[in-house]
Length: 128
Image (cartoon, rainbow, N blue to C red; front, side, top):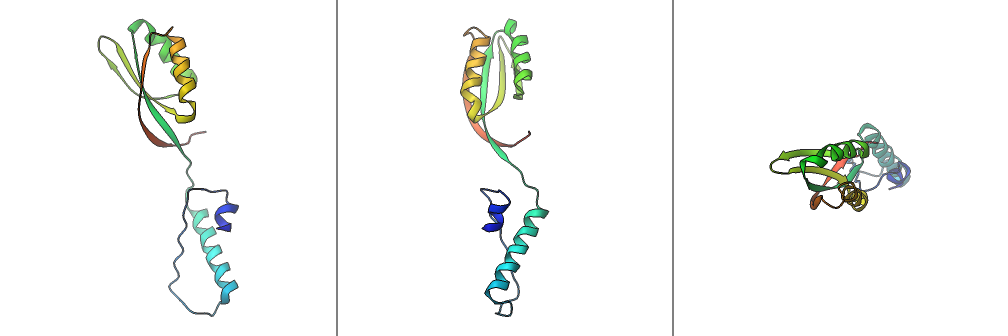
């Protein structure tokens, strides 16, 4: 656990398997061996931060689509897709903590004309 804490990790498990039993190393030696193996495993692994995202569906009229595209790019939102019918349906992924602020921003951008609905959630790799 000290190795995990010292690496600043959370929501992680480390498994170390020893194929030789016995008391030759003693308690302190076993702790050092397990700690060293855990540290080597963590150093060799890729550490990935996952961030919870919420899907948003934004329905707008065609004249507002250009403004929405610009705002999506400006905010760095993840665009899943766009459906063009009698209206434009834009499917986005936004970070869960930012969801309410983004919804308010999009509603203000459209002067209250955008219809926004929330979908499911998904974890995505964090891209700083």
